[in-house]
Image (cartoon, rainbow, N blue to C red):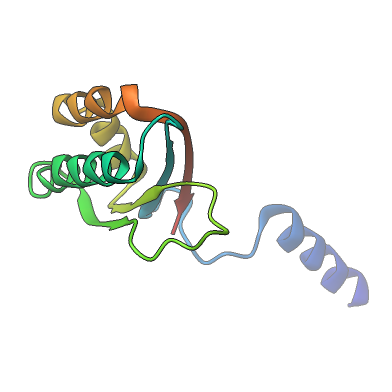
Amino acid sequence: MKKLISIVAVILIIFGCSAKEPDQVRPVRHMIMWTLNDSLEGSQKEDIIKMACDDFNRLNGMITGLVSASFIYEGRLPSSNCDFMFDMIFESEEALKSFSEHPEHLKNAERLKPHIKSRACLDVLL
């Protein structure tokens, strides 16, 4: 009996013990953090961030599978090493891929690109 329990434990460890179906569609959180160019002054940075937020806000209702979008930039502490962040949730990885290829998203990204020093992205399954 101990041997059977050990074998079952090893199988659960190897294959996981999640109750989720392997092909179950899971939501995706898409987080992007940007740092603006050093040459931009305070009010210029604020204008660029507002432009980016307005551009991406217009995508609500236009992008299939976009569940929610938050734009975080106010209240930034001196310990921060980026200027602003978008936190988006998509219905699935497929919806995120569709967003990444959407012409309006690409247009917004190109408009923002000249002002960006660095960009970091983290996509996670929920």
